[in-house]
Picture 1: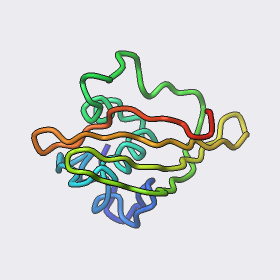
Picture 2: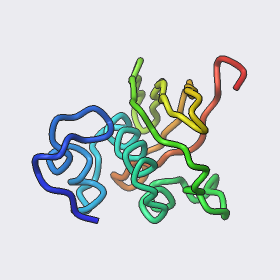
Picture 3: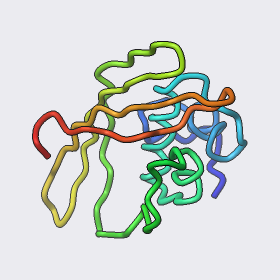
Picture 4: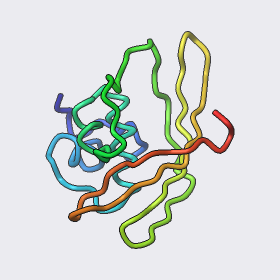
Length: 130
């Protein structure tokens, strides 16, 4: 689903096409783990399972549907930190969403690995016990 260039990006960028659209729709490779994490958040908001699976490391990628429609709506993203050490990186973020009229937040510290010049999501931990 192509979006017009003037549409805001779900990850917080002003222009979807110049932000996450270049990765999701145009196949450009994210140059940092933070760019990949933002584009994956945007893919979740768009229920783009193909992009999510393509950017999930094969060693940890789940087989089940990643975009189940639970009636939820993603509301926003806050990136708290991004640390890179060579071909490994972490991105800590808080994503806000609403399900059944109730607001929720997901606080995650995600691990990423770069292989062959391409970043992959590996896994994440939830510092608040979620």
